[in-house]
Length: 311
Ligand code: HEM
Image 1: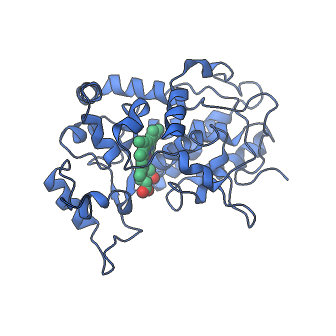
Image 2: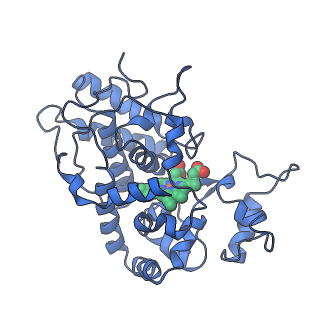
C-alpha cells in the first residue's frame, strides 16, 4: 500500500507543478498540439475505445517512474517492459495513435517532442473528443529510458479498499468511459467470500447483467478476453459514474467503496449532482497527475521512436 499512498500524495502536491510549461512547443514545434489532436480525432472516429485507452495509458505511465513515457516502451528479449506487467498486460490500448502522432511530429520537427508529452496531450484530447472539458497541458517532459514490468505493481488494483485508494480516487470518475475485462471484477460475482458468493454491495440486477456478460466457462473461470462497458454511456465523458456508484453499480470494489466513508460519499453525491464541478475538478486532477516525477532539462532523452529507447 505504501507506494500507492506515496504516489497519490505526490499527485496532490502542488510543489510538482514548477518545471513544465503550457505552450512549451510554441517556438520549437508550433504545430505539435494540432498534429496530436488530429491523430486522436482520426483514431477516435474509427474506434471510440481509443479515448479511454489513452486516458488510462497516461495514468499508468504517471504511476510508474512518473510521466516519462516508460509505459510506451516495448518489451525486448532481454527486458519485460511495463506494458507486460500486472495491471497492463493485454489491456492497454492506443499505442498506435501515439506512434502515428510521433511519426508526423518527427517529420515536422525531428527530435523535439517527447513521447511522454504526446501521451499527456493525447489524454487531454481524448477527454475533449468524448465530450469533456479540456485543459491546458503543461509540457516539457523528457522520456525515460527504463521500463520494467515488475514496477507496475504500483498501479492500484480494482479490489483495493477505500483506505488504500482514498486520496486519489474521489476524482477517479475517469471510469465513466471505457471498458473492463471481466476478470477484473468477476470475484464480486462468483467467489466473493466463503459466506456470500456475490458481493452484497453490488446491485443484484446489475450483478445479474454482469453475469450474463461474463459467464463462467467449464473450468469455472470467466473468459479472459471478455469485456464489458464500465457504465451505461461508456463513450460520453460525464458524471454518470457517480450516479452509478450511488445506485451500487460501481464496477470495481475500488469504485464502490467510495460510498463507505462520509467524506467520499458526500463528494460522490456532489459530483453526481454537479457535472460541471466534477469536470473542472477532474481536469485539475489530471493536470496534477500529469506532473508527477517528470524528467525535465537534460534528464532522460527525446525518444525518436516512442516504443524503444534511443540506440
Ligand atoms: C483505484 C484506482 C483505479 C483502479 C483500481 C482502476 C482499475 C481499472 C481497471 C481494472 C480497469 C479495466 C481494465 C481492463 O480490464 O481492460 C480500468 C479501466 C480504466 N481506467 Fe482505471 N483504475 C483506477 C483509477 C483510474 C484513474 C485515476 C484513471 C484516469 C486518470 C482511470 C482511467 C481508466 C479508464 C479510462 C479505463 C478504461 C480503459 C479502456 O477502456 O481501455 N482509472 N481501471
